[in-house]
Length: 542
Image (cartoon, rainbow, N blue to C red; front, side):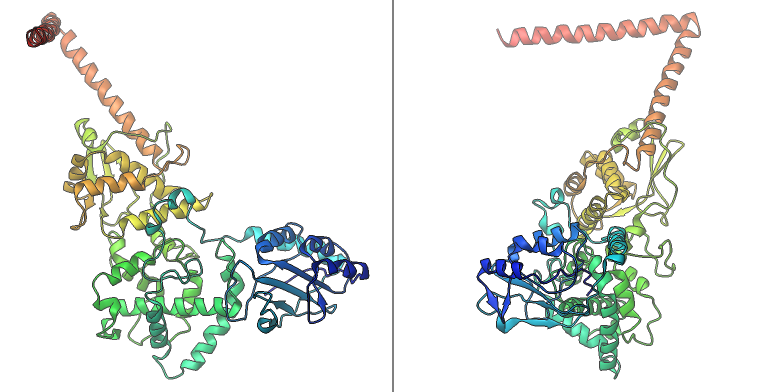
């Protein structure tokens, strides 16, 4: 934990004023929160003791951070998490160079019994280097990318089951929400570490590595993680080892127990797969990879962590081939959902838009207008949609039990990061425009563009694309170039058809006469039909 701040001087007048709180513990006076910001803004060394209720905790941290006075990573080494309500948080800063930070999470009645000391050196900066250090800290904080954000509220409303885990909670956001697999987590953790006789040494190495990775691990999450250091490290260790062992047992049947409920109970593995692709249910991939190189892996396993993950999620990856080496991954994969997202992104350059358009006709209408719909090559990524020479090539999409959850969470990932390209969201907009009727679903299924795999009827597939599709600005719409080319192709075909008609009927006098007779015949047909309709209505309503 890092705590950088200038400690204000001791001031007898302030100490006298602090009596207004009327609270004393261990002979220390607790200064009211209204005085705390003023105290922090003073110069020098000395002692400050602050008191505030946990309901004001967030507000106080915001104030202190805004003025650059403090960077705090909370640690609670006691037996409980931070629970907002009647609890009390007390800081006791003493000495001039190094101090102990005391965090107390308790009610006033049992405060003394639950005080926990966290032996951490705190750097007390003087005025000469305080400004430079403060600016550097702010720059570091801004440059950090929170790779796991909360699902945007507009997506979450009424659809919590698509974003919340049902079987296993991974990471801090849903800790304790889905507890069905907690015992299984510890069994897998024990199985993985006990695979070789030096389990205690392996455990020590893992804990030491995670202690060094803790600060970066906390910045991985957008929201503040209210877990103590030990609890946070335990979460990373147990959840990470559970995922690694799950991947290993999925890839190597010989490692499984015959009574393992993950593989012996129908539907469990599918639900686990869905839970591990949720945006709010992720661990940093760097942590997983670090653990993978520390824990004992079976000798016959010659697969990397990425290869194990790809095999586990193989049903979600169109065109998956275990013999194909992993590719197109950048220097850093943020988490498991990001790994799948990288496999979905287009590999070819975006079609440059001649005109910015974000709409087109649905599939059966395109077919009537002379545009051919074709399944793209199997090695194309799902979002690699192209249009050329009157052919719209679309990679196949397999519809299964996790499809809606996967697409929703990929879109949530894009919308929660303002600078992230809205590629998956654009894909769903395009597919929703292609699929307007059950006939469109049937057509794309016949073309092997939609692979239903026995899941869902035509009406359910139609509703899936309507429900998941979100609004995307035309400037952010990835396929605006494709839509522009399709609409331009249709306009050119109409012009060519009209020109051919003009050429055919105006080429000779006979053609002109024939054209006039055809027009006259159509007029007579419509007139006769109209007169018949009027006569029928008059006769019917007399």
